[in-house]
Length: 348
Ligand code: TXA
Ligand code: MG
Image (cartoon, rainbow, N blue to C red; front, side, top):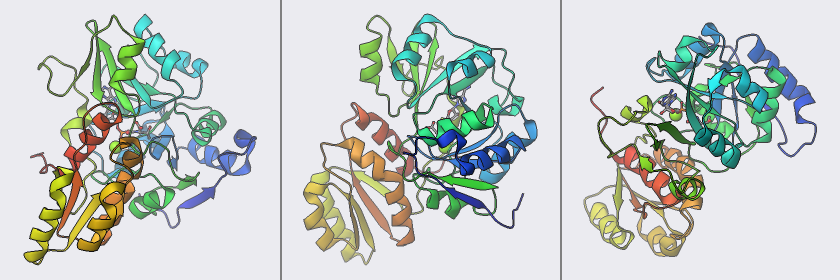
């Protein structure tokens, strides 16, 4: 579908009366009429539509160019919304919700849900999350709908952390964008599934494995990747996500300077996503260099990552270097996304 114009509503996320704000009310009307509207969350921008409408949800897949077998997360604003979804909630799941909602945790749940079948891509589970962002919560409340919402990027592009990223990818492919400023975490939510006595992390994100282990000391918490074949799979993980156009190389920070020099000798246009500690030296040597925060703050690096990948693409570099992080706390989610951005495209 093509629109002559994508409407932009600029809202102040700190405004007290957001749910009755005329911009939010109008954006919610678009959703009630079956249109898709992008909105900010605390992770990345989402592309929302009424989860009970097949036609509206189809517009999400069409706008993104997303494969139909990759299910969507349903976003809710409060617990009555969760009850309406008719999902089964066991003790472990209840504790996860109480500890981390609203927040960057998506929980895969069982039940017989009143959502359109294209939301779950035919799976018998439903992924649900309550975002911690006043604009997202206000929009969901004002629409009175549970919102199916993937990240608001073209399929295969980095997720958007600013409204301008959304319009770059989806201008005139969607009805509107609520611009509530930059998102916070900058990486997508953690996706978990409680199954067979194990809390599986299907996708690492803003809620860390360490935080979940602390909450559930008697429950095994395992990463889906690298575990047994029986582990539940998050269908989206088989696609190459978060892909910059520029070849990305992950190397030890101490080796980056040598690699930049070598690449430049070969006539290559080089870029670096640098730590603050190395920024001054590397910025002198490389054609393009961004200060991504200290090596000791992977959460700051994460919040800047997708924007940096988009910026790097605009410079048409031949190579982009990035340091590796220890895969603990937020470093786990960061390395997961960096490895996906660096790997070769999957066969499908
Ligand atoms: O932070 C986020 O989660 C953002 C914001 C907008 O909320 N959303 C997001 O959605 O990242 P998306 O569609 O880009 O990623 C959703 C992931 C995919 O990997 C998908 O396969 C997985 O969640 N997923 C959705 N439903 C699932 C289910 N029933 N079982 C297992 N995985 C599921
Ligand atoms: Mg996505």
